[in-house]
Image (cartoon, rainbow, N blue to C red):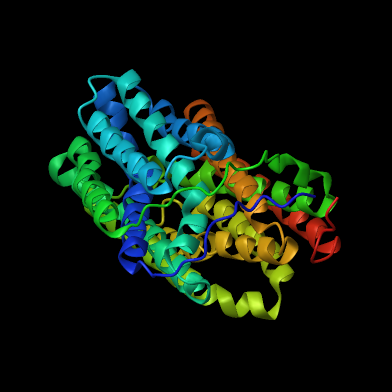
Length: 397
């Protein structure tokens, strides 16, 4: 198998300001990506569509992120990566502005397609960019800072969106991300060095990795995990409003508790991964399936539902950390190629989960939606177990 790592000159200077600018951009990007989750009800009412249709905003951004992640390297060619990153940040600003002032559902979906392009492009090149900003022994710290923006947005995006939506309306909640993206754009322009590509990236066919049985099983487990997660997660707000019967302020608090638990989960997961990586990969979807099933019967009970959602956030937010760890162990020489494939798989699963959840929620209600989530997550655990039996490191073919 041919390595897919593109060559770049060694870094003689360190640009920590650029790393922080990327973290700020990651925060704005993730906040923009999942803003609809906490605002489905007012978006649907204002744009005169059902909540299931409004939830397709997640599906559309995921689809465009998937396509972008697979082709941005070849399309960008020798374009300066600083220019490319700034262009992607500009797309965030355009998307947030268009979404905030969309006169109808069609224009709103166009805005979501634009943010999808920014998502796929940014995450596909984020690690390679960090490597070019700092010396090699500081790369782990730089990546941790960049992903810190992701984690922070995951904690506060949903409750903040819900709170702002109740305070000033969903449109201004969307627009609130625009100034942050503008600050990230200016920061990148000032703090990042030119990052010319030494040579054109070679032809990369990431799908060749799927010829390996371990990778195929692992990626199937990842796809099913995110499919099951977002079948449920996208429609939490209408569930909490109609079944649990919470007010917007209580809803914001419940989402904040779930986000804080998720932040804690990303901190605590390391100890479990050191003890047994594969066992953790199997247990995570099993626990998530049990929580999804429990929510069906416990939905009207506010206290129990809050505890279940806290447990969901604790486990689900830590799940990607576990699978990225698995990837680095499974493909130590081809982790960049595997990473590109995983980004595409995750985005496809997020979009598919939102679509499946929307159909089930509109047609059959929350019980069918959450039941489907539990079933898919249980199947994800089976595939994780099958991947574990294949060994820790797939052989290149």
